[in-house]
Image (cartoon, rainbow, N blue to C red; front, side, top):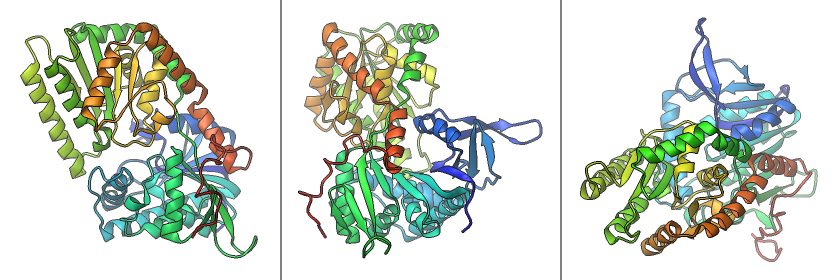
Length: 490
């Protein structure tokens, strides 16, 4: 295949822009997405003459490549059937629950898999057509697990990285996947495979041995047979925990209008003594049901004393065409209604439930208004909400209650860590957070803020790409990700 003209290509399920309307001439009008991945990679793309390959977000929407905010964007068209089978089906009905430790039961359908293969090939072909000779291609996340091998087959000259944003499960769970070997071989088309946690990388290495019969040594997987020049490659798997644009979030939260809005939020809530906050996509992995049950017991037990307490739960809409998600919404809203009905009074309700998304300035105000942030995910690759809360607290106040099953727990050791399955333990942790002295709150928050500001999203991108291009190691150097004592295993 002839090469394209771009030295750096990102391949992701979605383009980094949202369609916000049309021009007077009927041309689509786009706005750059506010996500952390876009923030991290946009400067790299501008400096390295980069292209971004992804779906525009609407079915059956075709279009030519276009330039936006200094980036060359290449839409990949998905039909309505592709969206149903590849995205809602295989990606979010099979891989998402499987990789999140089967919190919900995955479904295995051969026509979903066929669509996944077909769409992954479409992404790979689009990326291959854009990449210049010897270019770097960075493939993102679980929707595109097959792209690295497909890309290498077409363009062996490329340097290919893959980053898995969600957890990678233990082999006992991963082995349920009927196409486990194909998935591992797909990812092993990469030169470097990145994960959020060292345990995820370890799980992947074991899956390489068990599902694909590969040989591993330390953090490397040996692919192919024979010596150099005979198709042999060493693929490295390591942890590169993702982060946020901490500086810009801190600046936003320090804006006088946002600070004033935070005070207004507390007033709108009735000036309670204690504000608890949960911010999640409405997803069964986030532990929202557990959180509401725990909060209900805290109210009924009187564990928080005479304080007037409010829980604000933001649950942004997510994958509502997938039955597990629509069922979850019904269940959560039933729990909230009963809780408010049983314990609310005229002029006060214990839970303020918001099933909607908010702009960044409103989120920053909510973070500032909250005394305690509850991040009680049952399983999470990282959870950037925890880091956003920390970045927003320029006042060095507030307490983060954080699930040990979120990747952020590896970095944010000064949070109050909890096992959300342990109802009594989590209740005790919230009670402790609510009564923590200002001195302890400030000490913990300062330590958390140092970590988040030093290890921001720009550093994450630099470390991954530097390692992919052979300049630097992973944050943990890879030395802690071993298959044993350096032995060769089958």
